[in-house]
Length: 111
Length: 112
Image (cartoon, each protein chain N blue to C red):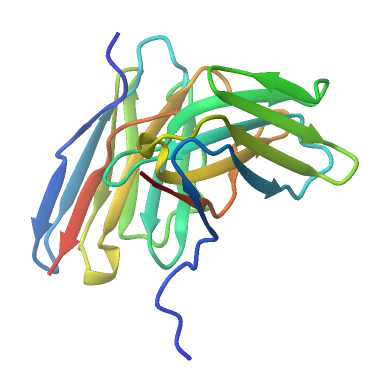
């Protein structure tokens, strides 16, 4: 059938659960990674970043894990709240180049 | 501190009209990016500037699109003539160097 738009992967969780959003990146030479959150009607908002010399970084209620062996990035959100409902994008950067954004994952949090 | 400022926030225009979108980056940032976001194609990089110089405009859809950055605190994205398929949300983002980009609230463009 005809495509009507991006079919974003969707993660549905209950309030209070922990959420894990995954991202596969493409370039093994990428050395910097960022997670963005985009709420409806707003621009992407920086959440947390990690460099390739690290495999874990923690922020407030969020943790980013980097597995360079399989080129995988994940964002863990603890005690998910309805306000966390948004589309989450991972982005990668390699040296002096622009960010390459993933397609995004929609997180839906039910009260 | 003010974030990236974009204007207008909403624009409705008729096909064939000229549209100008404006952006003020975060003070001290030396890189500026213009993106377009649609349901069909997601977030697309149109053009970016470093120290006010256009570095890569390969994402600009066609000659109807042009962008300028006359100084470190102002950039414009112009569409002339506009077409219905240009309807999208246009984001401006800025950064220091090529790392974390901070996005503006976007301009929602509807071309009738």
